Length: 635
Image 1 (cartoon, rainbow, N blue to C red):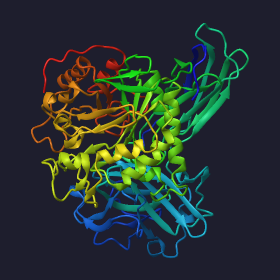
Image 2: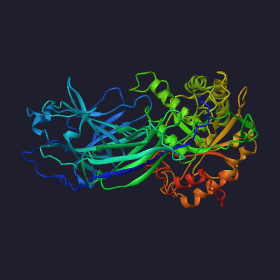
Image 3: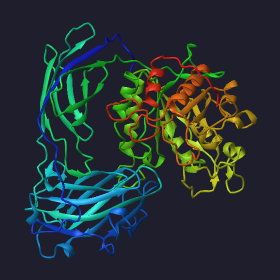
Image 4: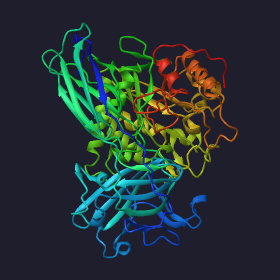
């Protein structure tokens, strides 16, 4: 653990100049245009699936013809797939030799591939072109909830930095690999796959120059700092500040990879991030939007001084340090490690949540099977995944913040969860930054089984059929939460433990009715409640436990659209959000707002520029910055 010294705050002040002129008007040919010598329809799915197959033993997936709505009268390829569990890599493919005959793919060099796609929810699909013995080239697409036609230049299919050249690469297979987070069935509809010799002229890359100066808070130049500009997918360019702290980055970037009808990829800007790195100071991150027009802006990256987090202990219904200082945990949930072994911008998001949103606590949902490297595609026993979590903890620790390690499971704990906690607790038992959240959202069991374990088929609570999540557990025997506490303490770990109640982590009434957990040899137990607009009786289900125990509102959030199970609609966020935060502040409950990820709702941020959502994130950011809210109505 690095301890803080007398380090000055440093700042990186810079300006960004971007220049480009381009028109993004590109009309794709009509869907039913007659093919000519310059084009070739490969698959239309008018009557059947035309020989498409699925990968074996990798995931549940079905193929059938399906009505494609008013746009087609006959059908489309319907790929039904399930992500999650131990099988996360899946797809469907076709050998192209039957559709192509003897015609070589090199006839279409310089042209493009067309495909129509539709998803039941927005998700990513990788379109992969394979050649036996020569590898594969791919391009990622974002599928929408309505039909979209994608015209993809072959020049945009890549393998690493290498660009597809059809003169040297004859395509033997086309493969579609969909990806969705939720562990439930999803549908990908596919239609009208075609080749064309027509060249699609994408806008030219934009050219830009990023320049500035690294300096400390007093204006003194900081030399030799490393400055990097990166997108989500790759590093764009970097530089090193000179002796006077000045630097300059000049580069180009391609904004678009394909043309779509209707236009969904008509982007004229690119989300990027600037980082500054100087030994002795912490890295800083600032989002930058690279634009296709003149954009003169000034950015400031503050390089924080190193701090350290003090060990916490439960003292009555509060958390205190060994010196008696009360600590009120407030922050956000940084999601993605529960569905992705690589995560999405984890360190960047944690840094921005602490440095710019003023969080002092990060809740990090994660997955036990990723931890042990048991998911498809993990070939290192989970080493890379555990190192990401190590880095997340280190990022919090050096900023004097805390991290809640959340085993993001639903239902009831089993032997596998006890196995995880023995391993994780042994790894982090000497780290005062880490708190252990045993189990995300218990439900479908009695309070007796919640605490002590048992056969879940014998006694269930009335939330077993709740519509919030349709995941099913194969196991029927629960070890109970007390066994998880004992597993943690058996390692010698004193870290504070967090336990969520029933009704999907909301109901804590049983804690005050004889089912509180015993903690022998530890720093205490805090109880967690997840509060959303469809939950009522805050006093009887949540606040009741605050009389004796510290509480952690581990998930809380709202959005304008009702969830599927909210048959009567949802409450106006402009009313619910300030009331909820006012409730938290009035009773000084520890909390982390859900979710600091633009693809996970309720969203606190809308994009990777970390723009607060107006219906929830704006309230979270204001509260973390110290604004007080007035609770006008209990629910």
